[in-house]
Length: 206
Image 1: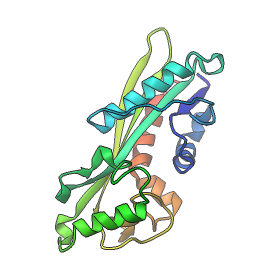
Image 2 (image 1 turned 90 degrees about the vertical axis):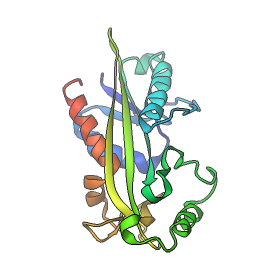
Image 3 (image 1 turned 180 degrees about the vertical axis):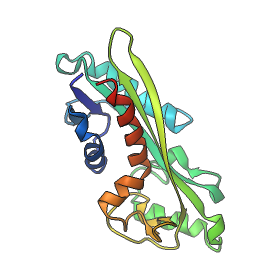
Image 4 (image 1 turned 45 degrees about the horizontal axis):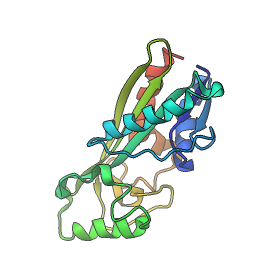
């Protein structure tokens, strides 16, 4: 097991993934870099289910390829949960208002739906579930979950982020996650938290 394939083509994610997992001492490839083409239908009802669906489907393909027969396959599903909106957009975060809709429009819509709602009721969290498929005589599968708590602000702020980062504020830092520097963001982000949990699990396997 000298390779990790992460089931994503998102370069923003891969920067964070490599920053945290790099000292595992194995090559880390995105699904795209591994040359795996697959559109996995994520029809689970939770972040964990969707992450595992993606990981197992990509692993089936990867483990049929000689160069990746022994690769660990990871996949994540993440999103934003806003308490006042009953947990929306949740597992539909990427598809909220349509996958081709810009996040500037999505963010403006969410802020609009919270118009007049006081700060104490604007609580929200980013959630990231990462699933792993470990090859072997007895293949192993498991999922970890990372979260970061915060609240939805009244306007977009910051450029060091993507997606919902500009409207998600962290009380401790008094700013949005898009205003945090990359080092701080990796230390506290939902994906960073999940990746560190995954790293701990993989450390005893690889």
